[in-house]
Length: 230
Ligand SMILES: [Zn+2]
Image (cartoon, rainbow, N blue to C red; front, side, top):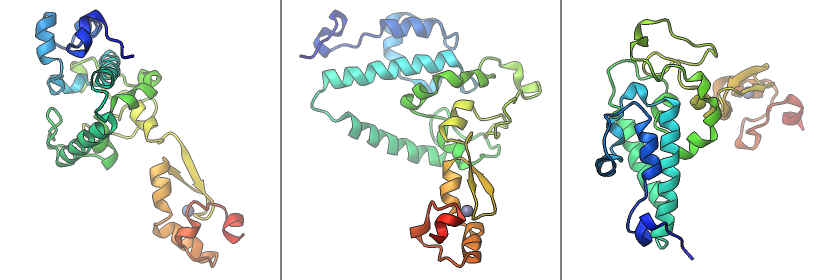
């Protein structure tokens, strides 16, 4: 049996009262009333870009996403939420690639690595996993911090705006993990993406040649000489 609250009117209405309270505490938007909020709560591109990474806003979005997904599943049981997400995600990816996402237009500064380009608008699920890592995202709240020295205690790579990428993003991509490859003479690779890619690169191929082993897909993920020779 599908359960709706009174406010939800058997699935006809959203109940965003709790989210509205959280919204009012964000200090990112003009104060408004609940009805007004309902008409524009989904205009996410209106959030000031420099403030999108602050912790309160992130947890607000996470709660909103959790509720909306749950509501969608209850109110539209015959629709496939996963498929819908996939469709939206690929539309988003295309826009993101073009730099035409509303609120994320390129500013003309260096675009940064493809990592940063692809990520800053992550999904709420991803956010949830990294709730605890926002301590390092220090500059969400000040508008005047442009002039200050950039605080970067964890030595994070710099993003499109010349500031350290958020720590949750860094961790999301596993960049905090170094992978060693013995075949590459003990070289280490930062993050799983770089690590997996390196098997196709010249350095690794050279290492394999030195061992007299064909660098075929059969040997992908083999990083020790003992394994390669086995
Ligand atoms: Zn290697």
